[in-house]
Image (tube, rainbow, N blue to C red; front, side, top):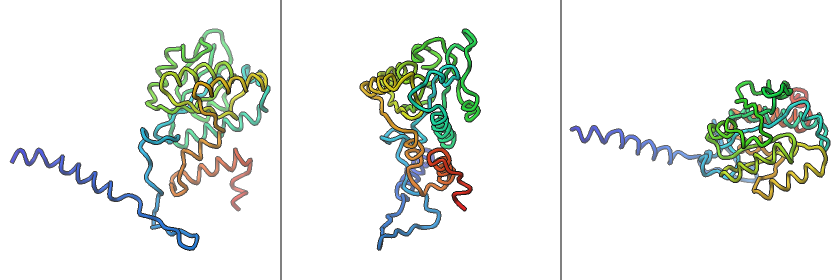
Amino acid sequence: MKPIKFLLPIAFAITTSLVSANSQTPDIKTINGVASYPANYQGTPKRSASEDPFLSPENSALILIDYQPHILMGVRNIDHKELINNMTGLIKTAVLYNLPIIFSHVGVGLNGSQPMMEELRKLAPNAVFVDRTNVNAWEEPEFVKAVAATGRKKLIMAGLWTDVCLAYPAIEAEKNGYDVYVPEDTVGSISQLSHDNGMRRMENAGVERITWNVVPAELQRDHARSETVAPVTRIFMEYLFKMDPDKAWK
């Protein structure tokens, strides 16, 4: 009887796997332009993190570099208020979908530089912080270890300035097997030329250029995923459309 007992867990695992595989989302058909859905429909099954070619809550991490007041002062290619608005929407999106978040600022412990802006920092109180001396964060061992510790291969990376403290680690990450996505409307530099040069340099290294609104759309992916559809819609309304969600829905 021992061999039979030994095989029972294996048989149960196989059966469970088959049931799970056969209990996929039912075929939904559109009739006269309208589809009907069963009760508690939650959309199509999520792709596995390793096979999904797009950003998902299971394969992505958010990394923000040098959003410090004195560095923001040098940004000239984008309105500061607009940049902070877009970054706020991005951080709130990452928190909503439980993405690992890394904040890194430079020179705080070394020479008393101003730390990351409090209005952004408070949006993700559980973020991992890395204080650096290196202009290129990828040359800071603590930073590289923090990125690896996320276990994610798709990095949503933003920083100030575009062509310096963002470009260097973004290019290095790409060379080290990560897929890097830069939301271009959350970053900036000392001139439009500097910003454009930085974006072009990263793009030539394989970095993907996106805008911040792509992130919530890509992480949500299916309107039927009810757990997050309402809060992500609020993020869109407030930070993309600049509307008060409570008033807009009345």
